Amino acid sequence: MNQTVRELVDSFLDYLRKERNASEKTLVTYEQSLREFNNFLFEYSGGRDLSPDGLSEGESVRAFLVELDKRGNDRRTVRKKLSSIRSFARYLVKFEFLDRDFTGYISTPKAKKAIPVFVEEEGIRKILSVPANTAADYRDRAILELLYGTGMRVSELCGLNFGDIDFDGHTVRVLGKRRKQRVIPVIDRAIDAVRSYLKTRDSVSVQSADERAVFISSNGKRIIPASVYRIVAKRIREVSGVERKGPHTLRHSFATHLLNHGADLEAVRQLLGHESLSTTQVYTHLSVEQLKKVYKNAHPRAGTQKSGS
Image 1 (tube, helix red, strand yellow):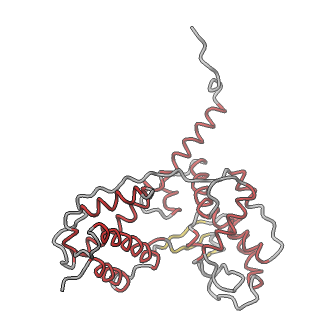
Image 2 (tube, helix red, strand yellow):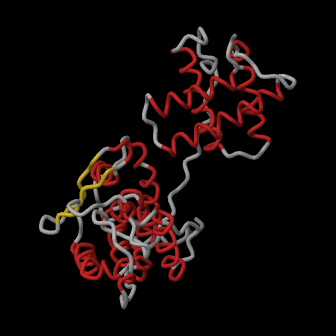
Image 3 (tube, rainbow, N blue to C red):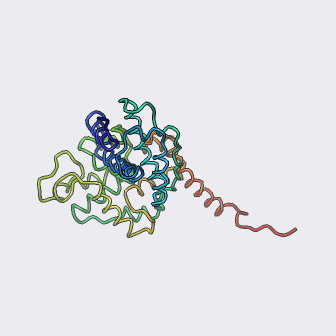
């Protein structure tokens, strides 16, 4: 008996989990996208489960993309869902459920590159001047200093273990995307803030603390991204009106300020852990805008208007 698309989606997800060792986050993304696609197929075909042969021309995928647009999905979301469907199509071809990739003639919607949100340098100074009276205060200050001082991702910060920070060498080793390690220089302020926190670390929790994790929550376990988001958002909200107030805003600020002060784009790429230079280039727009601002304020005739002849 031929398998339906619905059954093959289950097989594909099982393949990703067992054979490809996909992360839980990836599995959730793929499952949500493919379940939504399969539910659409059921309605599109008049209330029946399709076999893989029903996908061969790709018309149903195009119809699905049109439906996503009608539902108000942005281009980034549509690209993510289409990427899941493409991976599923390649799986069907690889294991000979189909002769050809039914997504091959479907173009991917171009992503609209959003300009990163960042905090001005004066705002960062205010954010980092957080007073420390309790063990949790010392932890929060160390988190803020380390995020801005290195540009690391929130997941990288939460994953830090003792031994990852070289206090004498002023570096930190992080585990980035696709489990790639990189070493980032750390400024004195961040090193000092982490040292101060570690002296009070065990007082953050009344429970037994995680013996490996650098940053822990009040329950004694490794701190999670949601907790870091709340810490950062609270502090940014106090001093800035920027739209986005999470840890990534500090990462954007780190990159923007480096470029504004003349840092090399390739060096910033390596610090951020971007695989492609094009990903880092989005910050150059901000740097150009800063140059325009400096030029307008500094050039003796930038503010003068043309006089009539």
